Amino acid sequence: MLVYSSNEGDLVLDPFMGSGQTAFVAKDLKRNYIGSEIVEEYCRFANKRVDSGQYLIPNIIIPDIDIPKEELTWLKK
Image 1 (cartoon, one colour):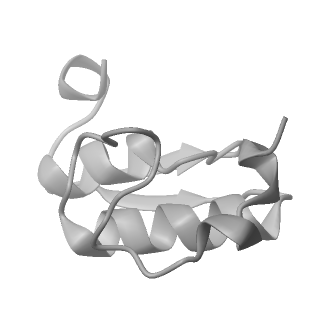
Image 2 (cartoon, one colour; image 1 turned 180 degrees about the vertical axis):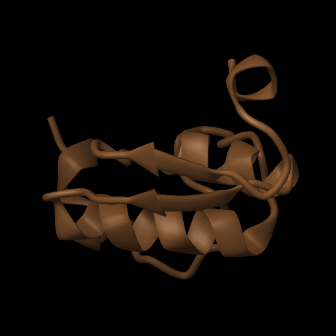
């Protein structure tokens, strides 16, 4: 969707950032992005995911990201 609705250098706003998928794709497509997230763990996760350059999230946890599973309370059932 970002490919068709924005151009390189545009600003993409994601008010519900979650795991950072939109930010990741925006960065990959050379768009600027800004996102907000109310859950601190999601925000930390998204920032590290975008910085890591890893698109897929195997088994929910990205091994290269150093947030201990115990801190990711949103994964607990």
